Image 1 (cartoon, rainbow, N blue to C red):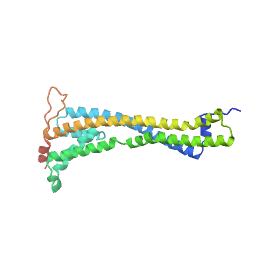
Image 2 (image 1 turned 60 degrees about the vertical axis):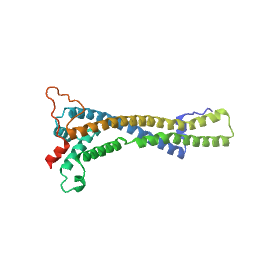
Image 3 (image 1 turned 30 degrees about the vertical axis):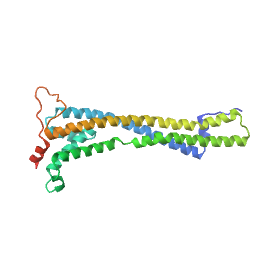
Image 4 (image 1 turned 180 degrees about the horizontal axis):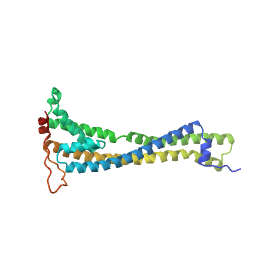
Length: 250
């Protein structure tokens, strides 16, 4: 009587260890695709918000207009978050009465520290999920390989007990055991591709954010923007330097 082989047969005959390994691979796959979906949606939303913010930044007449936009729209994406932290640092320095630690720091250095701290926070936030993807990419093939070895071991035991070691008796059980290796690779490959894509996207975004931090620092310190404004008829008035704003607010 010919025996029906395949994935269904493998799943119906797998033991407890095999089921446990399959559950692990399933959990890894679900985590991978969840991160892929959420990071893709988040990247699309941040790109749209970043474009809107940069238009306002290029056309803003001063820090007040920029601050009103940030407070109205929130600071979810890195560029607006950087601007919000810079404006908050200027206000904190202006209200430094009695705080000798802040008073001992020049305003430009205090602003630099605030912007650097904001970039570090955005870097940590952008790295969300990368550890999981790296772990899945490195561990999933070995989980599948362990399942293959375990399945071949049981297949050879069954063949030894039956006393039939012909090719048609060996090929089916061994082939079914190799399904675990295929499942491990199927889980690992999307995780590797997603990790590389996210790492490259973060690297480009942080490089652009670092350049914007220099522009924002120059805008807040000297009132000069390195990015051109789009308002041709009436040129924008330069923003007051942060040191002068702090002195006026004090």
